[in-house]
Length: 399
Ligand code: SAH
Picture 1 (cartoon, rainbow, N blue to C red):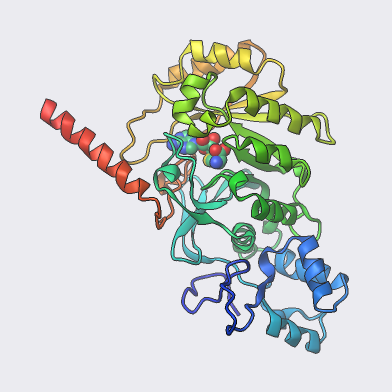
Picture 2 (cartoon, rainbow, N blue to C red; picture 1 turned 180 degrees about the vertical axis):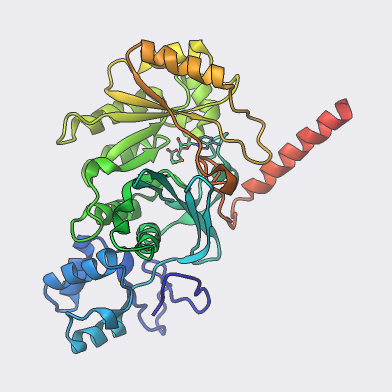
């Protein structure tokens, strides 16, 4: 049995990771990341009835059980069949940190040796879990520390839902009823969720399924930098809340901050956002617009005016995120006065505009600070460090 806590060596290949060779025995299927539909199909493939899938989903996700022997409503013969064919393998927790403000951060090792981070942000009795979707990120937004590390790989669906499984289980261990502490999930950790579409969709289906975590659709949010073709597919699969990382209201500036804008400019991003909202069964749903405020870069009142004009015909709420610094970044957080002025400009124009408070700063858990320990295959982090160091050297010479 594995408890989800450190058990790194001798790992079996994960679902979807198995390198099939003619002589190797078939890898056990990892039931942890199977969506409800995939689970039913899998049980059908081993000649078992669909209700078995429901039983397994409940054991894994509602009771936090990863040991077939504890599944007391399954016959012994079925348990041993499952032991032969399958496994329930969560990712491995390397470290858990608790901030003075109650924010918790888990450092999670995934196969291949890299680590990703998951953060829980409490609000009263409840709170939000911020989940990672990739090891590193390929999009390289200029103000994001995850992007500076380069891209390693997509997380499997087991590694994505496993973050919620681990967090829920850790609340269970604090006493009964605490599982409900996680009321919201945001796909705003490391990575671009829409670049890992299938695994993210499977994990979100588990989050919302009544046999699993039963989260309401409004309380699961996918945040994207604007992978437009995948935004167009999203409503075919789920109707979660959508957030877009806008950060600039004109293409010239957004091209610099969010390089994927060169491929899918603002007009296309907003068209896809509008279409997504139009396909939601609940027409009261609003788009969340994330706007990281960077001192002297995108935080003037002229920027606020452009943003107000841009969003005028889309039902939205604007979430301003003061830039969170990370090592070797040149950007600065604007003063509180500039942040308030930007916010009030938008509010005067009739927008709901909130400023995201920075949480978990003492454990580096704030937005954009999630670094994990990425085994960078692109060497981008080294280039970033070299560039920053030569800038520092030039300043020293100049002095
Ligand atoms: N790839 C997804 C999820 C990223 S993280 C996306 O782009 O939406 C969630 C939010 O944090 C994004 O809006 C991202 O742009 C923002 N962010 C990244 N780095 C930041 C930093 N250093 N300070 C403040 N916000 C940051």
